[in-house]
Length: 394
Ligand SMILES: NC(=O)C1=CN([C@@H]2O[C@H](COP(=O)(O)OP(=O)(O)OC[C@H]3O[C@@H](n4cnc5c(N)ncnc54)[C@H](O)[C@@H]3O)[C@@H](O)[C@H]2O)C=CC1
Ligand SMILES: CC(=O)[C@H](N)C(=O)O
Image (cartoon, rainbow, N blue to C red; front, side):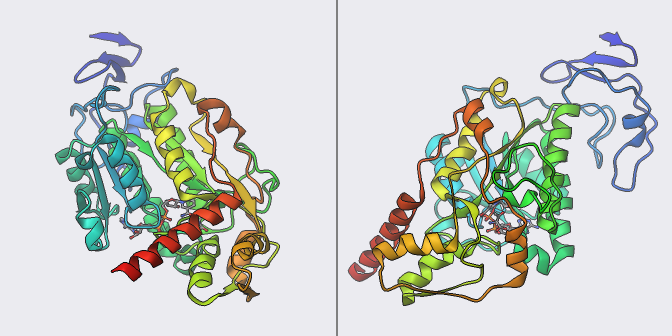
């Protein structure tokens, strides 16, 4: 064993890492963090592997050995998706299963899955607020990648701040600890909502003032900072993309400010009418779901040395409700759009970016979107038309 000041070098399992030479007497913080480990030792000068250092707060003894990342680049990762029954999780599972095999991707949520989802691959109950249950799932299934989708979005978050704080912040802490303890590659999405009225809005760069005014935004800035802190302090392989508003045809949004851009298609097809809850000139960054999910896979597969940052903006297009309506009206000239502004959502939208600068993602890991507004509208309409034909056949 090699020593270096108060640190010793160890290889219990996996790669060499520096651990505190004396980690016996530990004062536990209310959150279970071993404060003596964090503060009594000098901070080592390099970013180091986490596993045996000052964390694993809740239940891991000082001499427990952690596993290194069991996923070698030639193996398929074993993926767990939390909050997987929302707008994005089912589509992501489908994409990852195509790439890594059906049984290598586990969807989880606290809701009951619809039958088609239940029969399309592994599904498991997991409440991210239940730390032990999460750990059991990760251990029993030899998980190597964790995609953390559970969250309360901007509008529902404002309607239930206490629950949003608990799911989005306490839940994230559980996820970070589990991921760090078990050497997982961790993806946590952030959002355009992580910016606020004092951020530059047109365009919004990766690094600038972030003072969001929603609990959702605050929790996402917290997630970005905590993930990056765990990366630098403990070597956690944390990866994060700030998504714009995501538009999908076969899954519904979960209560956000950008939901109108999905709802307009459903209402246009069903009734030829749409009442928009944002002002016609509200410009927000948006993306078709296929681009969003592909970006997620691409950043997860990107070699670590291509990532100059751990949190990236990604973007595809920016439009207003009026511009989206006009594009739809090219195909549906009878569509009637009216406006009844929801003051909460409008205030949120007015504090968010109008355009998103994603040049770092394009430079570092060659991010490129496929769908602009015309392709988005055409693809959405094609989906509903195909669905209508199928329902006539059946
Ligand atoms: N959909 C969008 O436009 C955008 C989404 N994102 C982020 O992407 C992620 C996924 O978003 P969506 O699928 O749209 O969200 P969603 O709101 O549709 O789904 C979230 C899921 O989390 C689950 N959940 C809630 N509490 C939970 C708990 N205690 N334990 C486990 N699961 C729990 C819900 O049951 C739900 O299925 C979120 O983190 C969101 O912030 C970011 C920017 C844009
Ligand atoms: C952009 C998001 O994060 C989400 N769709 C919301 O509107 O809350």
